[in-house]
Image (cartoon, rainbow, N blue to C red):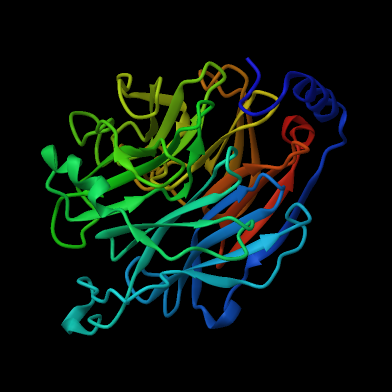
Length: 386
């Protein structure tokens, strides 16, 4: 089946061009160290608009690299396919400050505002970009751009969308994404979320699910809780998402499960009827956010540090935290059943990443590299080159 929004003749031409292209790999710095006086940029996300503009965004952690602190969301645009970037602009949270950092000792975080977990979704029907984020891991907001990310609407609170999940877990923490959401062939917008129900501000124990919109981002509703913290599934969170060639939505989720593998589940509508979660042996879990995307040629792409935690004898540590290095790109030709291609993109320190695809089939990977966030441009010819 032709991937969504790609006419069959265009799809065939794109596939032919992709197969004939010469290998391409190049990298640019998007959020380098100390840009605009920010101590550390983290949690990358990237999308390509209907006009081909690239939007790269992430958390601008003003004073240090901690998950909690004075944090904004900054964005950069590229109109040449990710080769060069316009100046960075803060886009969230442009509303009354919501202060309070429960993880700061001695109450010194009382005046800090943590804006976290940004997620963009391109609506290919309206051309708008829907943008979701959270504040202090406790409230969630949405806003919209109708001019390719140049300007953004005032934020609208959507925290009530998370309330149905309290039937299972009395959450204290909520988070969208991170990374990007998707629009299904039928027009539904779907965003992965996770929630935690321990102490105030604690990120564990956690569970994962999705929220969705059938009215182009005007309202958001909770789906079923698809990845509970039960049995072998330990603290699912930071889920990536894509739509498969048969129309199913697939989630691939981070956890601290003893198998040290990513969790996979699928749904026909991205909200209900999720399949029994399974661990995938080829998708290693170093306990780090990964990314997932469907290429217009029909193959799936996956990015993640390809490492495992090892003991002194070199044996995998069940549920251990692997080193955040060796960021690798995997490719599947059978809707994620197998991943025969695995190629290193960055052998050194590398962590969170997000994937997007340009209209010509070039792949973009926005990723954490040591102390910066960089964007790699590559094609399938490079990925499949021995």
